[in-house]
Length: 118
Picture 1: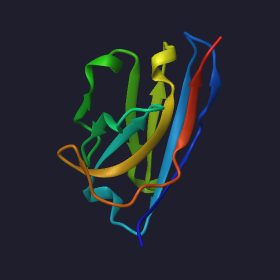
Picture 2 (picture 1 turned 30 degrees about the vertical axis):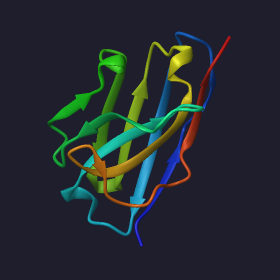
Picture 3 (picture 1 turned 45 degrees about the vertical axis):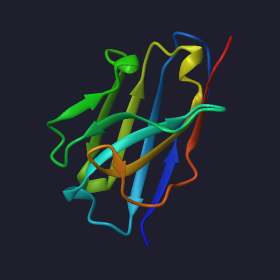
């Protein structure tokens, strides 16, 4: 079955940076648009960024534009999310998934927790 393994989260001070990774298995990774989602405490999960199957087309939610960068390595079945200029409101569990428009296609992985706090 399809599995996603996210990593790279942690505790960081405001203004800091992190790089998240997500490795997929059980799917033909290279044909899928991939997305990073996040779920903050007490809030619904939201789509943060997407990247087309070839890596050339990216989209971001307004709140992270200019601070986050999504990329992928199809040879490694891995999608990345570079987080810069982190703010306390970025605190959330971050997940990846294949996406059709904004709809996730498969079951979620365990996610990786990002905590932004001084």
